[in-house]
Every structure is written in structure tokens, then in C-alpha cells.
Image: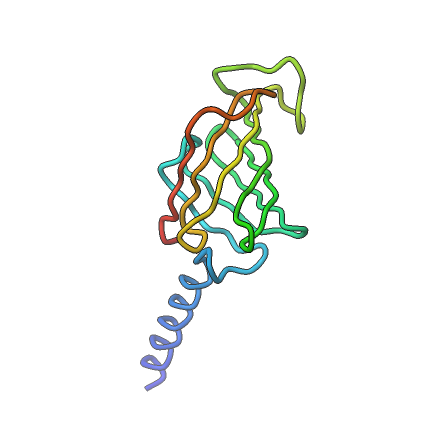
Length: 132
């Protein structure tokens, strides 16, 4: 009987954890993983003051501001390496650029543009939540 209870409890906890990561219901600090982006695998977290931060390939970081009420996000990305190096540094890196995107499908899809350095974003960006 105790084993059955433990198995049911483990199943309940894993189901709760899976739903907690859903971009629609996640809380501040809970990660959500997105795939298929220009940046490779992207893991984002909601923060304070409508900030969304993320991590991606090449020690990359994403920092954008927006909210679910007005799902347009604007900010920048940085990485340890990229095809273009900027004259100035941002957040300690000379590999960076602007990014702007909209969220759709209750935060499960990001669609927008990005650029290198201080240029206006002109390269397509899309990422989809992978269920984690």
C-alpha cells in the first residue's frame, strides 16, 4: 500500500511540474524551454518589472522587456561568440544585438526580428515552446 501511495505521489508531482513550466501558467523564476530559434535552444524565465531573461547556445543571454497583456518584447541578446563583432560592448560582450518579438499562443510561440550590434532588427526570429 505504501509503494502505491509513493508512486501516485510521484506521478502527481511530475504532472504538476510539467504544468508549472507551461508559459501560460508559470510563475516568476520558472524556466520554459523553446526550440527552433535562430539562437538554438532558448530557456526563458520571467522576472521582475516585466523582464524576460533567457539563455541560449554560445553562452548566450537574452534580456527583453514586455508583458502578457501587451505581448511585444524589446531588448538585446549577447553571446561569447557570433559571426559579427561589435565596436562597443554590451553587458560585458562585444557580440550582441537588438531583438524584438511578439508572443502568441499564450506565450508558447515567439516571433520577431533580431540584429547584430546596434542595427535595427531585420533577421527573422521564431521559437516554439517544447513542452518543458
